[in-house]
Image 1 (cartoon, rainbow, N blue to C red):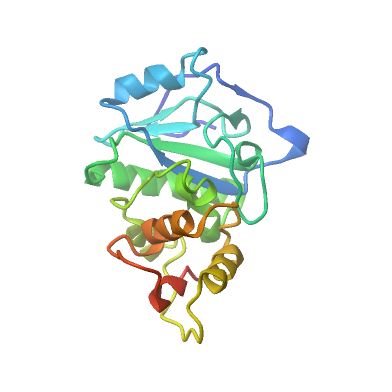
Image 2: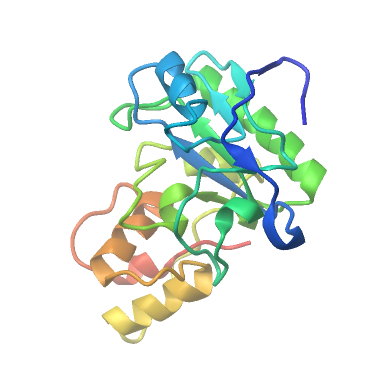
Length: 219
């Protein structure tokens, strides 16, 4: 779906959503490429077999490559809340960022505007806005620890980190159980899951598993 101020640059890398599914998630990525143009060329290259619905440059330009009603090829293998085929269930947004520097202010502002429209059009709540690493921990690390999830959460565009909770037993199994309950259902080792949840809710935290790691988001 086109919007005011959105540049259209169609990608051939898309198709119909499967099994009559419609978007209930938004997946945020970073491009890990040097420029917006390089990312755009790859996302529109039939040989690459990847795409996304939107690409946002560092200056805040929004480029639409795939209609929201169609299935873009951005998420790949993974799982969220026990659901697979995330491509058929989501809208993908790529942010022009190498992954080693902060996200620019104009880019974040454009993302917020875009998210509001998508969430309104498809009835997607804050809980449905996730990162690529949330549904594919270990395989993917984007949008990474430099992405400002708290900024989105403050505006109701993502869920915030949960408040500290009393944990009677800090163990790998109790953490895995808590993470699955929060939506992180991909079958990955504890250390991979810990990194993914910290990137989302506590990017400053390092070291071994602790009670604070159980604060995995609230509605």
